[in-house]
Length: 485
Image (tube, rainbow, N blue to C red; front, side, top):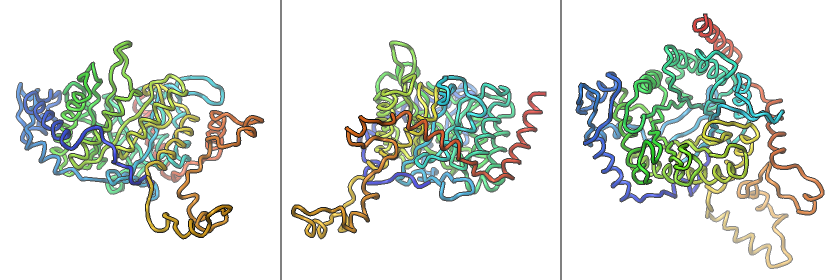
């Protein structure tokens, strides 16, 4: 889908060009002197092939700067995530567009009953259909985190199958269960959804996450995912998942140094395994709230460090994606201000692909009305990003001379009809009523969102071709029979 663009995208970074160079030098020192613990012989061989030094029988990898720079030089500056069977859903990553995507959660607010409950298979279907029907949702993280009414052994396969059957928008996957068949099964489902193995490779619709276990550990399961994604032609989103004050330093600059070092290690690993494979830096760096021991994603430093990672990605000439989230345990004012401020900060910093719509409580809670509300927030942000375009037509000098002074009005002018909807944002849910008429009777914002969610779910049909749905179902039947017998 065409993302939001404008003069303000990439206009805000919390570190200067000189400071990016200092962060880089510090990260290089960490990798060259301290290195990365490597839990997988396959990964150790990748690093060795790239020119790294192995110590402790391959359990420790030292990565020198020339190897890092060689790997970065192989990374494409941009790539495309493709809408399945619909080029209008394509998302350009790293080209100056900003795309907003959904997030996930273990529990769901059932807006029909008001119950907060565990997510089910039907919720996965509804989440995909709702996201498909929202104009400012450009991509989907998994609609829910887990299906509590389905067998655990093949939960991921069932979730992905229902998701792929009900939306053609771009997608993202991250998981680390280590289950025997998970990776080849999911790759097979994504290939079926794309129209075959060659079709997925030619037009990948998925962004696959690979994560370092902080501090500084290359994980065996994520190495398996890296191999699976690269072999299938799926672009990577690579990230450090450090928590400031716990698995990372308690300073923002220190967090940025460690996150950069760990991300650069994944760049080397990926480019050693598959030179030229597209990838994006990714921001997901909460800090620990020392009062509770819990991670915090809604705080200002989360967004600031994310913008710093975007600055480092720009410094290296690679795209950047980022996770947002709120810490609130309900859909309230806290959710609204944490989401809006972070989403806007991310967008201003030029992060191309932002997962933040519809969820809160640190990936624990999703709400379909909240997804509807944040779809409108994304629209607001997209309007801000345009800035002010200055050209002869928009300067409107002829119109100003023609209409004024009083009692002239611009309402009847052709120029107004031409530009009103393009220059002015027209919200669907936000209130713009006259106070007295609003006071006489109005619908609360949350109720408007519930009504819109209900309308979409009542009317939205899957855009996925029936033959693809059937093929996915056939493969899923095989997986369930294999894993549950």
